[in-house]
Amino acid sequence: MKLSKSQIHLSVQSVPELRFDDQRLTSFSGCVLLQELFRRLKLLKRLQECFEHRSERLMVGFPTITLIMIMHLMLGFRRLRDIERYRDDPVVLRALGLRRMPNVSTVCRSLCRMDRSSVENVRSLSREYVVSRVAAERLARVTLDFDGSVISTSRFAEGTAVGYNNKRKGERSYYPLLCTVAQTGQVLDVFHRAGNVHDSHKAVEFMKGCIEAVRSRLPGVILESRKDAAFFSEKMVDFLDSQGVQFTISVPFERFAELKPLIESRRRWKRLDSVWDYFESDWAPKCWQSRYRFLFLRHRVKKQSKEPVQLELFTPHEEGYEFKVIVTNKKGKAKSILLFHNGRATQENLFSELKSHCSMDYVPTRRLSANQLYFLSAVFAHNLYRELQMTTRKVDRQTTPKRAALWIFEEAASIRHKLIQRAGRLTRPHGRLRLTLSGNDITRKEMMHYLEGLAQSA
Image 1 (tube, helix red, strand yellow):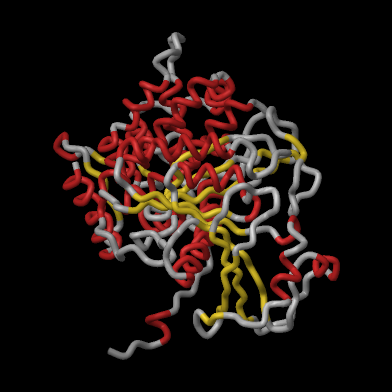
Image 2 (tube, rainbow, N blue to C red):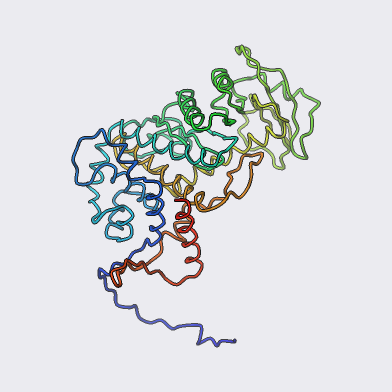
């Protein structure tokens, strides 16, 4: 059917009169999904157990404040004062189990009264949910990746320090160490640190806790781990090998000057594919007592290196190639080890999503415990969005050489824009509660898919 221009275009001259009435309208109809997810996980009850040692009788307790923080970040807000934007939303209040939202000042005071034991309990609960998901999938192989991420702040906050920060030099920061599970794309655990420490600071103790947490639920599981050059040390590789963890770690050229002539004098390289070549050597740092497998790799690049000239003192240089060295205890072929090690780049995407969509990079208060709880709430928000998708969908792929996540996940922002931030009206015809949304067919199908999937999993 052919339409005329007048049937398509509309001449708009005036702005409609605005009225603001309490008509039980909501901007977050999709919170019914979060309400069902919280109920299925018994999240509020589990949070209450985290604060059993606190004897204060508060109108709004610490478990509810923590749940508000998780919801706040899942809705896409950042600053605490933005609670005022949805304090009267009826669907958000129902998902939180509240009749009235506490004031922003009440939330801030409660956050600042958090103690170390409470934060550690919430951290343990977050880890338990992720381990339970891994155990439910009965994975034969679990890949744990470890790396740090800088959380900067332009003001003073307890526990921050001025450290290495190539983007915001001179600012105080935290430098937490995170453990992520490659198969589920979730954050298993977090070790909060000041910003002036090295990547490997107290990393062995943290890794041991993560390994024990997974093995306690999956005793026979094969554990793997990938790390960058900041974690390269004899203490680290001996620890991972003694724990039975299959690992790969990048070797830093700057710390071992003998690597440069060793690579540049090499004439015979074995070909892996059209891009990569390699050779193996019995080289090891002179101070090491142990011997491990070292892979020397090079790959062809199309563009000339633009790095500063000074780096050529340490890094091998040959026109058209870039080099890397990996230490490992894996027994497979060189190509499979290279693909496995390169797969750790997905962790950077995960950190990016945590900061962009769950506000992990925001420091809301001056108190250390409050900031730690906010950080854990961001981790919870990310993990719960992943849990929502894993609960309602089957795996999309099997284990890949790069250990990509078993599900093809949508980002938190995508789910938030498509489903959570939907306008609706809450009514009660004939005494039965009803949430009415617009009649968009795609939204209806996707919303019902998630609700039915959550109901079946329960």
